[in-house]
Image (cartoon, rainbow, N blue to C red; front, side, top):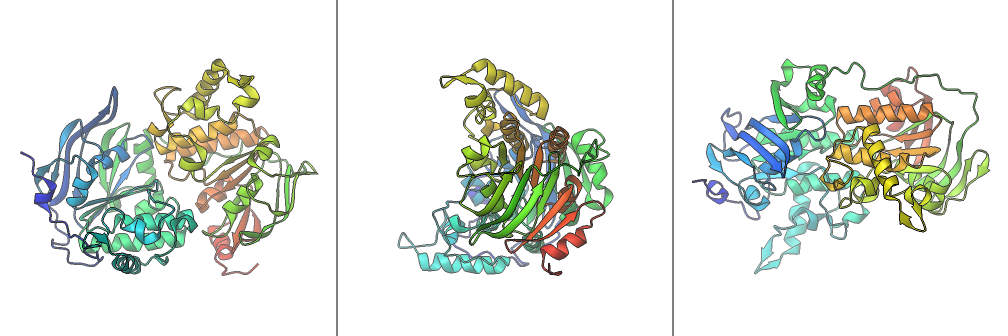
Length: 528
C-alpha cells in the first residue's frame, strides 16, 4: 500500500520558512530524496511521457533540459500532484507515494514555481504569497501576521517589494519574483522551478541564484527548468536531457558542454543557433518607420529612432527601462506626444486597430493573456487578426481559408500539434509562441514589433523564430526586437538602441559590439 503524504511529513503549518542550513536532514546526503521509476503519461492517444526514470538528490540542483514539448513540464506536474502517472511509480524518501491533487504534494514537502504566473492581480503581494494557507486566528485570516510573515519572507529572500502593493501595479519581472516567493512560502524539501528567470533582468536573476544557493545549503533538492544555457551551466549540479517525451541521459555539469547538451536536446547538430543575414542590408534606403521625440509622462521620455525596410533594430535595457511601454505606444496603446512617421507620413495611432491598418503587428511578451485565446483552436488563433480582411464575406468566416492558412502556418513555423483544431492551451510554450507569430504573419505586416519573442522558448524553437525573422527581413519587413537576452539582441540586430530610466541613452551598430559596452550604458556606468 502507498504511504500517504501526510504520514511522511508533518506540515509546518504557519511556520516561517528560513533559507539556512538545518532543515531536519543531512546536507550532502547522497540518498535520493525523490525517485521516479518508469513514469509514463498519456492524454488519450497522445503519449506525453514514455518510461522516464530519475533520481533527485538533496542539496543539489538537477536541471531538466529539452525542447518545448519534450515532456519536462508534464513530468514536473506529476511530481506536483497535478497529474497522476499512467504508469510507473514515485518514491519519496524511499517510500512509494501517490498524489491525487497538488495539496497532497505540498503536504509532502514539494513546491513548484510555474513559468506562467498564477497571481491574483487585484490582491496584494502578501495575500498572493500566502493564498490558500493564510495564517488564521479563531478561524479568521490574521492580516497583521500575514503581512509580517510576507515581509519577513521577502527580506529573507532578498526581494525588495512592498508586501502591501497590489500585484496589478507590478511589472512582469516583479510579479515573477512574487511567484517565486509564493512557491517558497511553504517549507519544502523539493523545489521545482519552471523557467524562473524568463521575465527577470540580470540583476533580478542574481537574486534568484542566491535563493537557489540558500536552498542547496539548507539541503533541499531543486529541479530547475530553463532554456538559458549559460545559467544552466552556472547553477546546475546534474543535467538530464529529455526529447520527445523520453529520457535521454544525465550528466554531471562538469562533464559536459553547452554544445553537447544542445545536440542531445534537439537530436541533431546545430552549428549556429543564430542564422546569419543572407544578403547585406541596403543602408541607402530611407526609413520605413521613424519615431520622433515620443513621450508618455511617467512611462518614457523623448524616444527617437528609425528602422529601414529589411532591418532589425534591437532594444535593450534593464527591467523598468521603458522598452515595452514604447512598443505598446507604437501599437496604438496610449496617447503619446511626439511623432510616429511611416514612409514620410505622420501616423495617428489611436488604437491597435489603427496600427494594424497601418501595417504594424505586435508580438507581446505576455502570450498567455495578450496574444492567444487558450481555449480556442490553433486555427481560430492563427486567423484571428486576418479573417476580417482576408477570410470572410459579410462577417462569415471562410472555413477553407482558415484551414489553408493554419496548415501553412504549422508547416512554416514547424508547430508540433495534433492538427489545426487542437486547443492552443494544450500546446507547449514554444509552440504557443509560434502560433502568436503565425497570427501576425498572416497579415503580412510592414513593421513587426517583437517584445521578448523567445521568452520561455527552447533552443530548437528559438532557431525557428530566428529563421522566420531573417526570412521576413529578407523580404523587406522592418523588425523591432525587444530582448533581455543580450547575446540574442546582439546576434539578431543590425542596430541596438539602449534604454535606461525610460530614455534612449545610446544607439550602436552591432558589428563588433561587445556585451560589456552595452551593459556600461544600460547600467549607467557610462553616462550618455
